[in-house]
Length: 142
Image 1: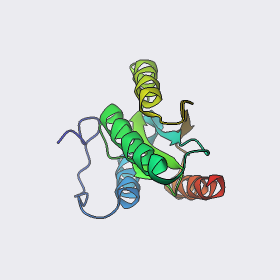
Image 2: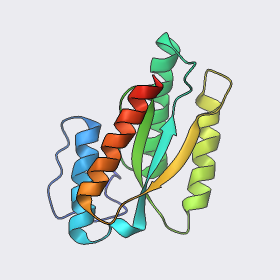
Image 3: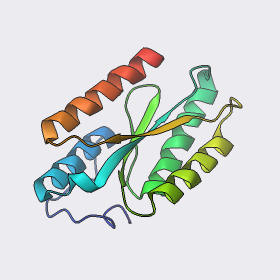
Image 4: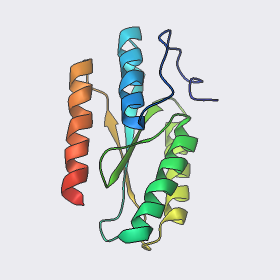
């Protein structure tokens, strides 16, 4: 499994549970190690016009593509956003370009999804707040 290839976490991160809990645990590790400054959250927004089965299919496809691109599980923050940690290294631009291309091919609405980066805040509680805000944003879009 390649989920730990980009940072080392000495804590045991549970493999069970939902992906949002796993993302919070990975944030715990990054901040405890003092490595959060080198990472961001990459966020993918589903098209608001997608509904029913198309919405479900896109959610699953987007989460899989995001996980493959970042090497870590993607979390769904509500109905409309997929989120994952991404290393802000020299390959970031190429990774984002590849991610946008693959997501564009996976869309069923004819419109590519919106993709953006959220820089991790200076402190862990603020990172949790950012995840909460993304969850609220996701809920308001649906």
